[in-house]
Length: 423
Ligand code: UD1
Image (cartoon, rainbow, N blue to C red; front, side, top):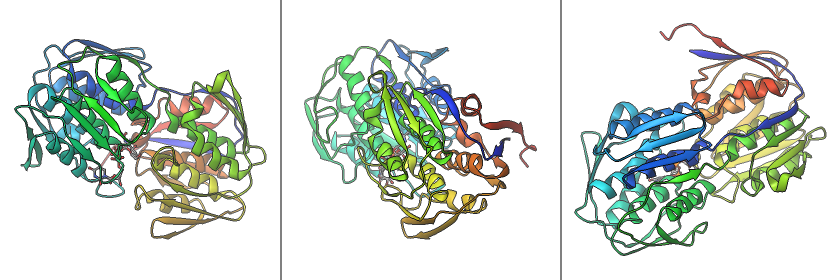
């Protein structure tokens, strides 16, 4: 199992380019199943999760070809209806094939994803949405089995704002018979991109980018041709690094309008930003970032839960007390015990972490527990004096493309080393 060996503390400088968004490309890949033909997706990040989704699609009979950052998916022979446990258990987002498969084949069998490191993460809203469209859904042998002779448009309101459930139900509704209204829909940029890509393929959707989506079902869609939006979480992670390491770096190829909440949080520390290229490049000036932050995670355009762990790493080294609350995943704090190993002062109180800034962190061996926790540990390791060894970096390979090369390019001392074989 690979590990990262980090020597800190370091100051970053230079420029880095953001890759395509993991959370945008996964639903787009699944959406190719709705139509019969050859879809093209550009700016695809090379990640473990994109390879896993490719395997899910291949299991369903699609032909998948990566060529650089271009992905071609041919769904003409995609006749399969089952996403097996072995794949789904490694990536929850496999559940995105439920809506498209049900829409195209009138039945789907998708392994029920299990829990994850920080909580149960149910899929009830996905299933309720499919049922609202007329599907019969049952759980049998650990699988979600959904059937519908005909999907029919319906009015459905999500009890909670859910990115995954909104995307899944939307993918089924675009080819359902008649009109669907989705209330309290998620409007994260990744959902908006999916809706826009579906519209470009012939879907009829009103209210794209809002919490109310009105869909008029069409007979069929044409294949997708889409360029993946930049990864706002990857971009935010680099901007956070600038504040934490009192550095000035340029982050290219991002969308500022997707990053306002992160920028606001980082501005609390004293970090400032200069915009270039019409909002596609941000220079983060972190030299005077000293103050603590208070923030609460919320659905977009609020502060993203996927940036919570990284902001906590920043807060650990700021002056005074910071309070970070996660309302999306109240238990998403597995990184806390690990960052504490570096000397951070963090107290948990329900869904909040109270962080008292310390003068220095000291390197230590730590273990990554999930994707964003890994990013936080890398950031903390870069700020800590001495050597930090981050174990289980396979988590980070799920969602950050070439992270060590990119940080290396910014002047960080970080190296991937092979760990001992898994027992
Ligand atoms: C997506 C992102 C993930 C991010 C999360 C929240 C992908 C592949 N993953 O995950 O990185 O952290 O959005 O922004 O895009 N919920 C239910 N029932 C459901 C579905 C969700 O109760 O059926 C709850 C969840 O437990 C959570 C909240 O709704 O409390 C939001 O979760 P959701 O937006 O669905 O997250 P994902 O789509 O799984």
